[in-house]
Length: 444
Image 1 (tube, rainbow, N blue to C red):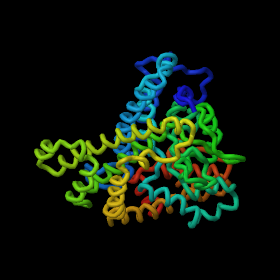
Image 2: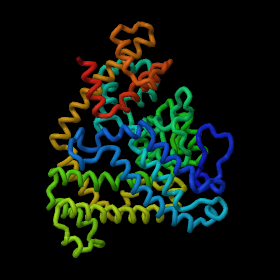
Image 3: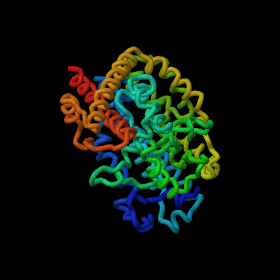
Image 4: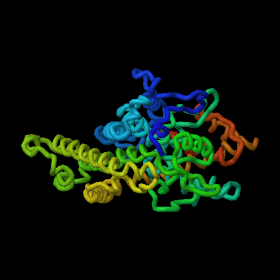
């Protein structure tokens, strides 16, 4: 892979080439990507979607929206620091093509801003609930009517693939969804493969999948424009990662490790003594002890340590990326950057404690259980109504139910796969609160 191709400004539907050197610095294409994401309804819905604590009424607990903004900020910093090193190493990128270190930051910031845009309500349990509706629930009846890969898309419903669809899917009058640059779409896609074969290797790019069968052809177009390296044979589609996807992933890993931990501390799920013990290990080389001792509240002490920890992890991620940049460009680096971090043991300790005290807390488990029931119920009601309508045998209840679908979801889908995926997409775009409200309506 080469950086000139990887930094492509092309957008879906373009008929002429976009050159960085011809871009107006006051309205750079990669920054347009960020603007389009942040003004989208899908992004706004993240304000009422679970990050860790479902439907929390506590102001300082993160939602998917605040988490995404923080990941974007961290991603921008990592991208700029990497960009500075890349421009120094390959000066022709700047001298001939007009690229700037801030371009790297803008791409990573936009991709990071959107990284959770396809996640269903109720956190990761929402993904599992959709998948299990098909694998072990009432949706099993559809299996014999779908291809193997279509079925895998449903039983392993994946927020990353759904996010790619949110960003790129056309609907009447809107060609190409948000029409983001191909560079941003490449950086967004952490798992550039289809749902089968499942985990064919230990390569981090093969851990999950990044696009549905319905989006496969467009993803191939994006990957080929960017010069991404194909790593599958026969009828299977998969690629080595866009290098900047490693930076998006690192930003997310840093934020959920440190900031989810901070939420747990502020909620009293993790004691301050534990927090200090774990965070000090990350910041012992950079902490200003005198300043720390002047902080009189737990919140201020934890905030100070959190900021230092994130700064150290950012610099370490940049170091790991630059040391492995040539292998990454060759498609020969198969790990998350944090897997090679000098702080990996400390991060693993924090995650282990977070799993025990936060992710498996009674409050989280109770609300995830409720979310499972809600999603299963909504899927069954809306899939039945949508299929009955398509087959011309809708009941009056079906017709009334479909009327509460948002206008943009009033689309005819010919194949069963497309209809099932369409309803899954609709459910996935609901906020936690809206899912609860719809469930009350359909069960009244």
